[in-house]
Length: 388
Image (cartoon, rainbow, N blue to C red; front, side):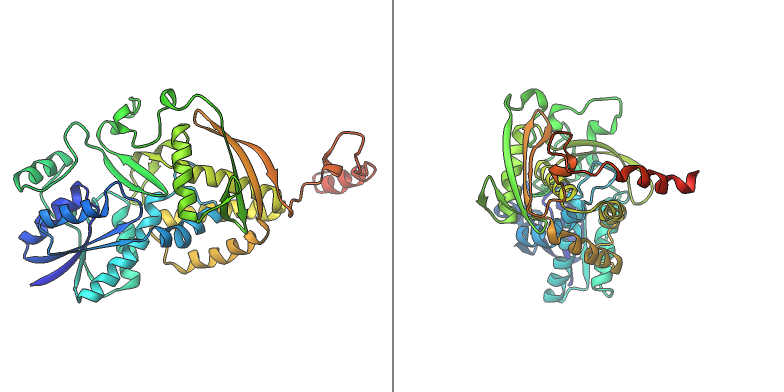
């Protein structure tokens, strides 16, 4: 019997994929990467077996995800189209890497995924798989089967006794990891409607968020978050802590008309409190410690970095080359950023670094001003000479 390793998330699509692949004569081996899913490992294993899986691999990859993928994007200030911190996009190359490893271990000639024909994840997974293991054959059931909607998939699951948690009243497609949650489909496809309350996953709607200011200090060493309020923590714990704090304050939810890789626009809603908090604090620390020319170039690098990750080109030479530049810029990104959160806002209240390029003696308009005003006239003449 032919073996196929399926990237199994526990959602509607991949649950139906197990049954479909079995009916095609495959021995189905499920691989689930625990990046902070809404499903517990025990729940995933139980439902995969009930859906017909012959074998199940589940790996806790949160630490690898945080330090090898999230941290690189954070240091690069990578945000796609101003509103998406790339939570799902960053997870896909890591999933592909381990999917390939399981396929090699099982001597499987096929891998499969549950991505839609119009989505981004099919591109991200398949490009990564082909770069890492060109000989593997890829099966994408959602591009082949005759189930044309999530409603028809729900009916298929019901008829085949496949355990799912999606229903026709809450039909959103949700992908969750420690860096964020993506929500799409259902009523969100109607652009003239405000997102329904049942589209909220864990961030509190502003009207239900706590009615007080929450103060937090984050310490970075060479761009790496290492402490919250003076307490040393690993990166996974920092992300999980900030997710809880930010969610209570209604922080980190974005609503985006997004340009997908294949060319269509879609509406995506994201929840990523920790990601937005860390991006805000990290950029603020960079503005204090990096010179203006480096900051200006880094803005361009950030846009390209986000584009590469979004398009599934994590394992490209260009992304690795950009990392070399980004890593060098982090040498002096060390210090503490204090902020307060209130009703969806993250407001900076404190900046401190031994590498700060801010000098109060030059910046002040008070009596302690040490700036030599006589230099300005000559500077303006030279600066404006080409234009005169």
